[in-house]
Image 1 (cartoon, rainbow, N blue to C red):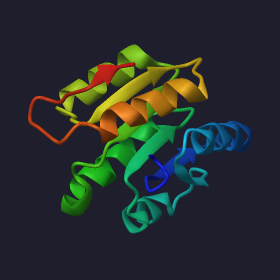
Image 2: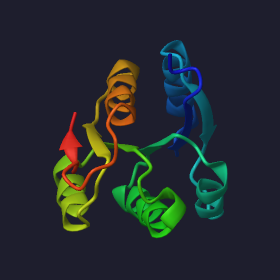
Image 3: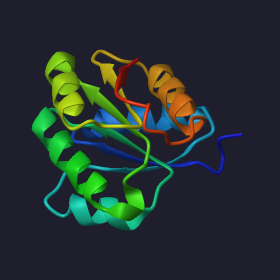
Image 4: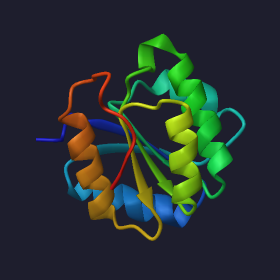
Length: 135
């Protein structure tokens, strides 16, 4: 059911990216994983995934990638799951941006939580009422 759903996973910890990739593939997603790098902004725009998972150790890295994504009209509605070790700060930041189609998952997390968040986001059509929620 999710086999056609392509997920771009950006994680700055290779071991976590690998584990999360396996977990999401087990849930039927096609996963393209990459680390955080200076050129990641262009990769984000080029990839054309169905959804994005951001797990950066510093939330400001996730924020900058989120802003790059939302500034591109072609990807402004892309579903995004953000994994954060500072969920209160992340939540406040995303709310100030009036972020839509975003689910925030606090650390520690499981692959199943991320898969459920993706399932939820990908089953909801874009709407002005769909704001940031914490999973």
